[in-house]
Image (cartoon, helix red, strand yellow):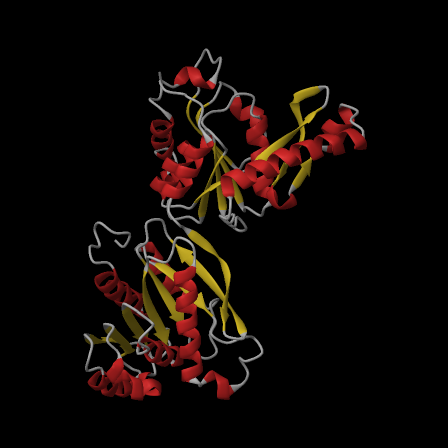
Amino acid sequence: MLFTDRRDAGRRLAGRLGHLRGEPVVVLGLPRGGVPVAAEVAAALGAPLDVIVVRKLGVPSRRELAMGAIGEDGVRVVNDEVVRGARVTERQLAEVEARERVELDRRSRVFRGARPRVPLRGRTAVVVDDGLATGSTARAACQVVRAHGASRVVLAMPVAPPGWVARMGREADELVCVATPEPFYAIGQFYDQFAQTTDDEVLACLDRAGTARDDEVTVQAGPVRLAGHLTVPHGATAVVVFAHGSGSSRHSPRNRSVADVLTASGLGTLLLDLLTVEEEGDRSVVFDVELLATRLVEATHWLRAQPGLGHLAIGYFGASTGAGAALWAAAEPDAGVGAVVSRGGRPDLAASRLPLVTAPTLLVVGGHDDVVLGLNRRAQELLQRCDSRLVVVPGATHLFEEPGTLRAAAEAARDWFVEHLCPDARAAGCR
């Protein structure tokens, strides 16, 4: 036997995929047997786990011969050459597709439920099964993830028959396999334990993978809908909500750079635009710190109401005017925020609220940002009810554009959040 069970196979397969660590990877298991294998791969790579629900469209007279495939969200791939060669009529193709669509929808409901599909656009999709026999389902899965926008497709199997690479053609950009033994009769012959995987086992694997998310979200804040990007790594115990400065957004390279440092340490992030597109040009709104703080608190309530996220500790990261909003919001009695970091912030905009802040607060300022440095020193004197610290980054100006300065600010923020939001950083998701 090559493998004890599917989990053993997944761990062995993960050892062949270490070069993908650090890339924007999504691991997709083929239900049902591929999901326990994929779960081990995802855990080893620190990547999100999802299912790839596909149905092969078999030629009516030779069902093992694929003439196409269908996937979730209406994805449809048809091999016109096979259709012509097998003389399949449009009506026959439609009948096969309708039948397989019913089964695909049923499986999607069972395996996904209310769990959103992990976005693939621009990412490396690693398609995993417990083994490869004919390869038709694997080819279909590769076609579907490509149609969903994956920039690169990796097909990974614990075991496959000799010559399987040629059988896959160009469906995947990379093919990975632990073993290709001979003779090869069936996948199960290489497992000591190969009982059929149940629906409940698939769901348990997905649940154990955590509440990992990485997608665009819309937050209802009073009468307006705010755009945001939510990232929650596997095993995270805290989420940091970003309040951007005027003229910035969730797409800002600086904000994303800081968020990446936090998520690499196991912290979730919600990069939130506190203003609508229509409001961004109105300076009376841009500097309305009380309004921004109110929206930040409402976003905090929204975050706590999300399935699987309500137990996570919450921190605020504010830059420039956003820091004023973060500190104002932290002073609200129902915010329940666990820590605050201000980077190049304007805490003076929330001066009247600073004596009410109880959350541990870190003020990070550039050494060459003289005016803002003075504002933060005075603000620290008003933070009388919380643990506070002022960190000055040498050589940095207001936007931390000098080499290495933004990284230094991000690492200081990371350390502060890990210290105050993760009681036991070694045992929790923060690391």
